[in-house]
Length: 475
Image (cartoon, rainbow, N blue to C red; front, side):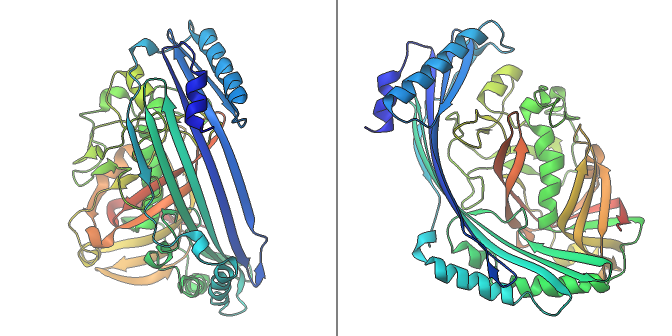
């Protein structure tokens, strides 16, 4: 019997109930040095049942998909809704849950299984061989992961949504060592997730990247340490994604603003009265929440509570506009939000999460940005991050640095770091690259919530320049 019919057979007499079914299959192949690692394959299936009744809210999850199993879980969710009825911080009788119907399918040209495992391993072996340029390269690994997810969302009010996702995650890591000095260069260590199939490897220029990274790792071994000074900082897109994620994405999550994360992952410097008037960045800063972008990692048509996804300006011309809050948080805060109630699995309830959070391109070419800098530094690829519990003061390190002197790239430097305060850092944004400088990335491991949820998030960004930033070298 289909899951829809089973759900219809167990619907209780409540104000609202939903079923969210997820089945996910994953395979990861990797070659470390010259050794093929054991393939990692997983399969996971289950459902989350939600009940809202007379102001109470309850959840229950189960991997027993029989009608009996679903009925037991529904009864448990109903029980929790009854127990919570007089203890809620929100009046759920005023919440209008979505009744949408629709579907979504990732755009895929070359599916994972269209190429044999041996051929995929041959590709990884060939790329791994390119990493070993000399004996100073002491470790290297190349991997590919594919994930296929099917999700069905049903409600007693008529909502019926089916969404199918296919993800590809390539990674390359190269470690160089000489004496006491160790440097690394990575490709997608935590950022190269895309929706799509094997065709995305060409778009990401995956082939040949290992040799490039090994060459750069050796350059870093011989490079001087990054100087300590205040200067202009030019951030490449693969570092911008971390800056967006930590100092825009997490601070603007509406449940965090309302206090839900304080005892676990910290609070935020942002308050509700800032929306519509707070100068978050310079007038060049435009940030959108946009799950509708084709092939970006966190694209979808509906969130996990059935709300339709739309492109929304979070920050426009530097002014804070809209928080990252889903249906229930919007009711709780009495403010507009976005379709971002998302759960990491069938056994987790949806909470407010980033999806695709992107900095919109500006008008400056790479050459124009470079030429505008008298003394500065280009930084690429995050290597470390630290941010305080209000998502305000931060310190980030990068793998690659290159000094900019009188409008030209000069000396490569190692261990580059910079620090700032979110509330003022974005106001120092002085140049935003045009569409030719934009890259699209996907983060597979954003953590939040109790119990913890590891979520897929997308970020796209142009290269950007920030004026008068505190830069320092590491050890």
